[in-house]
Length: 139
Image 1 (spheres, rainbow, N blue to C red):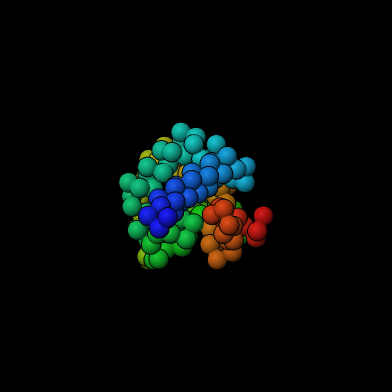
Image 2: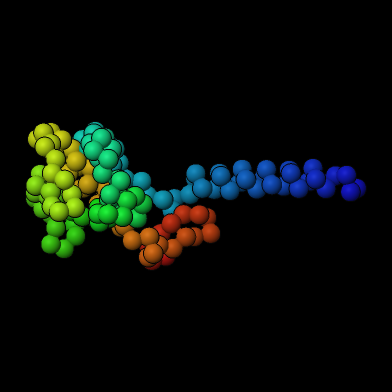
């Protein structure tokens, strides 16, 4: 009987893993919006990566610490698309100016708008549910 315990534990863990995986992938708790997948926003993410913006700025609390978190920069009070474009073009004491093409500007703004629409950036206000899903204020 003692010889079967390792096998029983292994089978139980494997079944638990597949049951939990099935639950996560069939759960309706996660609402996926297709706005982020728009081709313009995807090209904007490539611009974000090309100019290495994440080395100074954060998205969803992840990234560099020199610049501010830009997850919700478009909808932040006192900020707008025009503000972001002006800062990217002219820079400031900590941020260099970039000579982006008109297409690159539109793509970067679309990426920031899509990220802004996807959620909020302050991870301290998130709640982690038992399923592993993250929600805002327990919703």
